[in-house]
Picture (cartoon, one colour):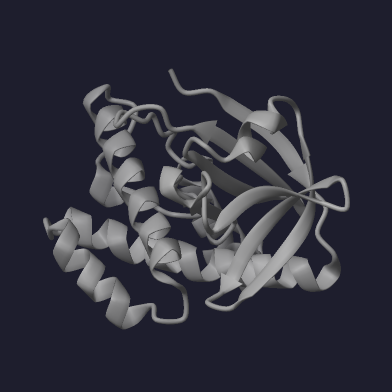
Length: 208
């Protein structure tokens, strides 16, 4: 059973800028991976392409982009089979309605990009205290999310979790973390990864 815990992040201005840049890069990585999956490329082939084309982010961040694409593609296929969606190939990241708004000049290019680049995901790893790129830690007695923003740089973002924070702080089991930016607010969603089977909800932006 997967347990999801929601919360809030309270980044300072410079921290928010770095989070936004990570979201932009990984979301671009995710879209690239998604298109390659639709083309029928294998995971090793895609990972080799990502290493060449997205060297600005570390391998775990690239892997997070790949798994976002994989889970989105699986969800899109399920929705397509249930006649709730046309086909995985017709996905519009950012939303078809928002794309039309952009084409008609109702939203700016910057607003459109924010809609397409509003998430960051890191898969859990039990051998790395639960999660290496996005890890919950205590600093000066307060809960923070430690974010790997580059190979040798970390930021500690003040964090609130609705429940079960001690379980994540223990770090003896893998947990995934997904950060979603909405209306300028950053909301982490954390889930324990207790088995190889993980459910993933199709990113809302696809259907907006």
